[in-house]
Image 1 (cartoon, rainbow, N blue to C red):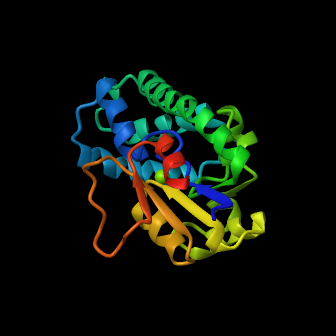
Image 2 (cartoon, rainbow, N blue to C red):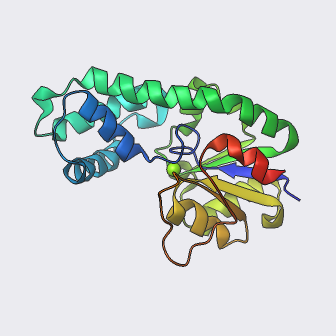
Length: 224
Ligand SMILES: [Mg+2]
């Protein structure tokens, strides 16, 4: 019997299992960028690390987080002069907001039947991001790795989320797009797991989620 449902944020609530790096890359190509994905991805990872150290990041909402990351990223891009940074940020933001809007009615229905929480590797500002996206009201608890002190897949961040809900692992599901962080990490505690991933993504050997979906709305069918 499921009582609580834990969700990842990035790639899970704001897209159908597509991580931030390939989504930023798509927006970058759309905005004039010409690097291949491997080259872009290395710079994107560097921008992620820089974001964690950015002064004032803990107060940034969703759009401001995107604008800040695009600024950090643009400074690293060798082809920055050819890239329309504003268009890049607009594109990424619009796609994310569209996915969130589609997911809100699903989450509203789930929130009437289950207690919902978020477990996310984030930069300490997930709460203001959720507020801005209209999602905060749907979640009883938010575990942001920077604030909690542990990052997925460390089981302690999942234990922290369950403790905040007063729930045992047996009554919980974890829904996420990252096999290593979301699925392997939660499964260690005995939490049932639902992997959100495009149909062509192959899980690494040894990781078997309890369920698999291609779009977040399919979670209702899994939980029923
Ligand atoms: Mg994710």
